[in-house]
Length: 289
Length: 252
Image (cartoon, rainbow over the protein chains, first blue to last red):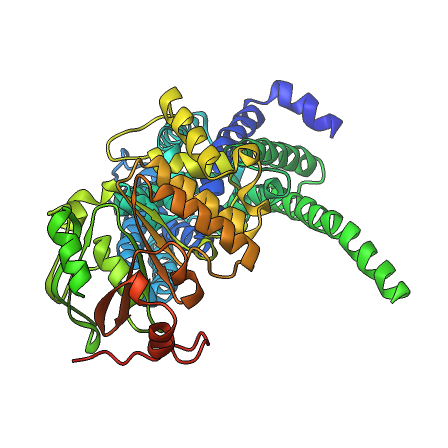
């Protein structure tokens, strides 16, 4: 741990990684809260896995056609937004088949990604870093992109707080008040898509859902309102990504997985902690009865 | 039926339904329904489950479009004017774990198209007034999830009032409430009826008797009764013998 703080002062690599984690955490808290209360975690998972298709395609075209301008993150953003719009329109139009479509898109996105990555000539890219994240691979130029996305997501997410809250809490009532429910639902999915892209660089595609939901789930035990939930989830997420990075430094563990395990352990403790008074009461009652 | 026609002739109707039919795919739910509701009325829409009560409600709100016939609210299509209707859904339709305070729920009634950012002072005052009217002023900062069923239902009435409606439309306001809380609800609605047209859907016959002025029985078709004619024998005739099992035998 101490080595980490020493290294942090010298290594710009670590500083960038830490900053990327902190930035991602704010979007994670804000959008994660919407996703959890609206119960669309599965949709977020679908969008996350489609990101691989975009990343793979961008890397392929960049390598084959020398399109230097095509940053892999552009591919990720495009794929995520496309997936968000497709899933959103399907779930608005044909509710009963929603899960089938999400599941299919989930796998198709990954399949496209795998094919593109395997066809890249020369030395192949290791898809592991995309799947399981490698925050240490974030460069300072990535940081600007991630920061921009982050600011956009947070600004829109907070500006439309009342509308999004109304759509999440009682969609029908929101519609009757003249709110364009379809628009805000798609907006929420697009914000989710951008958040997912930011988070993929921190914990990777496979573990995005965990980072989106675990801090919010923990915060849910302590918060009365959605904005408190957002705030606490963002703080928790910052704590998890930063300490994940710190903990994995000396024993050379993968930072993404460490972060998620940490969040999972805290969540488990909170759940158990909240159950203890209940369990005690019921066992005492059991003895008396 | 006659009494109702006299009523509507004198007072401007807020809701007019003409030859309305509605079907889900090939299943007809409502057939050739015609009636109107005058301003200031206190209407109870009753009928058996699956008889089309909820469908009728959703047609009035413009959430469904008629298969045939038409619905007019304030003389206009519902979608154009539904912001002037305060709607109260059943609280069981909402996520009981949603983290939201009572005052935040009520403030949702102030939302409208094309306004972003936080609520203003006027919005908050109006929400407070509505909460007081619903008798829940001291619950404003409590989590919505921590309230009882009856309290939640009243929060949703307060939210509907915050819309400053001319019509209050309530879906089963007394469902799953104990009799004492039902009485409170009746009193509240009676009080609100002094300035609003109140329309509620209920499968509960007992609710009908007290303050309701007009009863609309819905079972594929709709028959309008003045409430004073729907006491004693006629209730029994319509619904069977003092039970909540509902049998409708509408004259053709």
